[in-house]
Image (cartoon, rainbow, N blue to C red):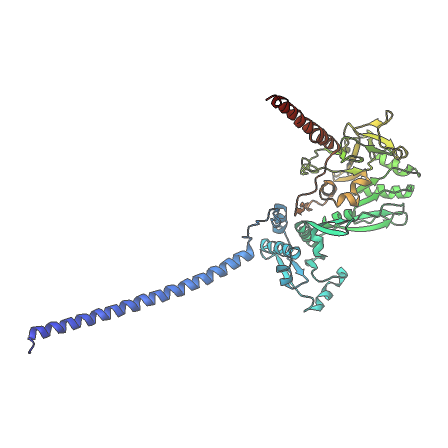
Length: 505
C-alpha cells in the first residue's frame, strides 16, 4: 500500500522533532552534570579551606569549652594579662613524646590541655614543643645548668633564663601517712606555669634567705614551695659568718632557740633599713632567753609572750591548742580570701602584744586575732592540762601582725620595709599542705603584699573534689545538742503523745 506524500512529510518532521528533543536533553544533561561537578569541586574546596581556617584559628585562639565541673582548664584573667604583657618569646619544652601526654592517663592529659591553651593564648609568643629523650638523648645536654632532668619534665625558657618543673609539681597532693598513699586532689598547673613565665621573662629575680646558726626550724618545705612558685630563689646563710646578700628581698627567721649576737642584730637592722622584708615565726621559749632578739622585735612594735593560746570554743574539732583565728579584712592582703567558707588554724600559737610605739612612719596591722573565748597558759602549765583556770589571761589575743616602716630621703625617695610576726605553727608543713585550710593562701597573699615586686600572681588551685569537712568546737556542741539530744527527745515526745491518744481507741 502506497503512502501519501503528506504522511511521509509528517513522519520526517516528527523524526526531526524527536532528534532535536533528544539533542536538547543531551545538552541539558551535560549542562547540569557540569554544574554539579563544579558545585562538588567548589564544595570540597570550601570544606578544605574552612578546615584550614578553623585549624589556624584554633591554634591562635581557644575555642574549646571547659565542661569539667571544677573548671580545670579555665585560664584566669591574671594569666591572660601576663601572657599579653610578655616582652620576650617563651619556649615550653616537654621532655616526652607528644602522644604520651595527649593520650595517657588523666595526670598528663590535664597538663597537655593546659599547655595547649597557653600556646593558643600566646599568639605566637609561646611555643610548646615535645621532644622524646629516647629518640633525642642529647636534649638533656641543652639543660645541664638545671641539674638532673627526667623524662616528662617541662622546661620553660626565654633568652634571659630557664626553669623546669616535674609534672607532679603541677598537682596538689595529699599523703595518707597511715596507708602510705599519695592522692592528687587538685590541679595547680596554671599557678606553676604562669609563675614560670614571669620568672624567665622578668629582668631581676627576688631572693629569700633563711637564717641559720641558732637552731632554726629546717622543716619548711611547704613554705619553700610557696616561695618558689612566687618566683623567689632561696638561699641559706649563717648570719654570724656571712652578710645578708644584696639580692635578698625576703629574710626568714624561723624558731631560733638561742639568742642572736649584737653584731647579727645590726646586720638584720641594716638589711631592713635598706628596704628589705622579713618573716619571723617563733615558738615559746623553753630555757634560753632570747634577750637581744626580743628587744629588737620591740623596736618594731611587737612583744612575744612566752605562752600558748587555747580556745575551747573556736578551735579545730575539740583540740583547744589548734586555734582558729579571726582574719581581719585588710586591703590588698585579705580582701580576696574566702573567709566565709574556709578558715585557718594556728597550733601552739603565742600571743603577740603591741608595744604602742606607732608613729607616722611606723604602722602596725593586726592580721589575725583569737576569739574572746580564748585564754593563754605558760608552756609548763599546758603540759599539765588544757582546762581554763581562773588565773589564766583571757583573749582576744593578737596572733599575726605586720609591722611596716616607711622612711624617705631628702629627695622624697621612699623606702618601705615590712616584717610579718607570727608563730611557727602558722607556716608549718602540716598546716600549709592541707588544702582545706586557708594558711597557704593567707601566706601567699601576705608575701605578695610585702614584696616590692608587684608582678606576682596568686592563682588558687583547682580542686578535683570537695575538701574535707572541718568542724569547730562550738559546731560540735550544736550538733550534739540538736541531733543527738534534742531531735531524739522530740521524736520520743511525739511518739508518747500519739500512743497516749490511741491507747484508748
